[in-house]
Amino acid sequence: MSYDANKHLTNFHDDKVFVADDKLTTARNRREANRTRLKKGLEADKEPMPTEFVPQGSYAMSTMVQSEVETSDIDDGAVFDREALKGARGGDRSANHAKEMVRKAIAAKDEFKTPPEVRGNCVRVYYNDGFHVDIPVYRTYTENGVTKKELASTGEWKVSAPEDITNWFNDQVVAKSSDTLNARQMRRVVRLLKYWSKSRSSWTMPSGFVLTVLTDEAYRHGGWADRDDSALLSVMRSIRDRLTWNERVRRPVEPREEITSDRTLGRVRKLREELEGAINELSKIERADCDELMALKALKAVFNTDYWDGRIKELENGGGGGPGKAGPAQPVDKRGGSGQYA
Image (cartoon, rainbow, N blue to C red):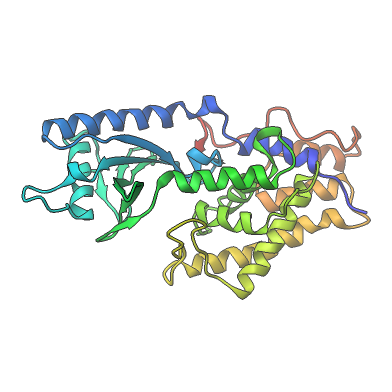
């Protein structure tokens, strides 16, 4: 026997984890503003215009989560025609040169307190509230009838099409999740795992992309019908076991290079370590003596939230209402102001 905490968990997901479309206005506005800045700056510098912009990352995959301890970012790739990026003598511009071209255009009017910065795989635009926009730079060309894209990476151009990851993830979600509600169960599990990984300010965890790839590896075909709680627990266990024998994670599409590194393995080990505690708590729903109170206390401990405090207090004081009563309609939020998204 196990306690069915699905309703409690899905209500929490909908209220505190999921980022509704109307909450993304700031992110979209900043994305559009930077596209405009880039085009105006490039025009003023007599540089080539992007052929397209490609949203990517958690925004494109709809796995952004509300976050109480971290600020948001959004990835918006700028794609240029390779021929247009030729230098004065007809040679290809270097990856660093292309990123510097974009940085210079974005920074042309000196509108930012912290200037835009060239980073390994992107140009980063910083905002005073902690939000940032990453602009990866790509070049595209046709070779033997095949259109290719390359990313301006650290010192080199790397084969990498930004839409490949988004298409891979969307295809995996449809193929593996039998339900069709609220973006499907596998996507909800990714969101819940990401929210959990951000639930303590002292934690330094792997990127959302690493968590997404690990979730795909761990999530079984068909999912867990009407049991997001069982799905999350099973995925956590699988990821912990997987990281015990292999800490390295690779891209699921070409180029299938490693997305972890010696420098970030500490984060992977932290993930494995903290999964032990989360599994110990969440596995209480599998106990024969688990009731609503025990389940809610386990969820509270896992996600480090006061979301269920009202119902927990009611149950501790002998209140009823049955297992379907899933926390306050308007959860207590001690932060003040509006939430942020990651």
